[in-house]
Length: 173
Image 1 (cartoon, rainbow, N blue to C red):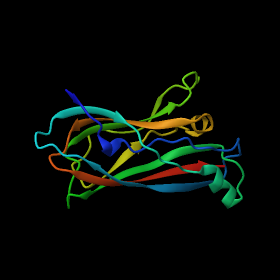
Image 2: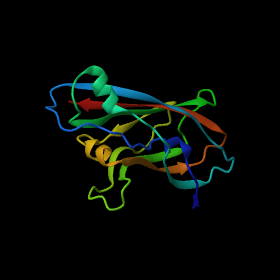
Image 3: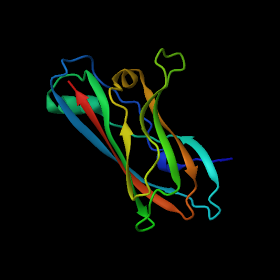
């Protein structure tokens, strides 16, 4: 099986700095667009299993300060979506599954690598929403410094394919 980086799911890598515990009664969403990324197509469309990451920075501490709400007590992935922009009316026919993982940056961390979102099977549509795993608090990982990595299975698209994305995180105070 050919290994390759499947840029479609190589979108999330972060070290978000968040404040200490709060009461959790107030919450708000913060979001960020994921810039366009192109996956190089292959007419032979070989099967692959890929894993990768790319930077995504959400400044939750600045968002809580801006709202005068106090420090965050928890943060949860609310939505993660991808939309193919090229080719026109393109779909995710080439992707079979994806898992998004939190991975501590520090190798001596006591935090385990855990999944925060997954989608299997991936629908043959223009836009997909990777389903967040309920109840996974990313705050401890963010406080310590963590990457959000992705693993995906499928094939390479038959032609060059460009996608954009959007991520939403709910912050609890």
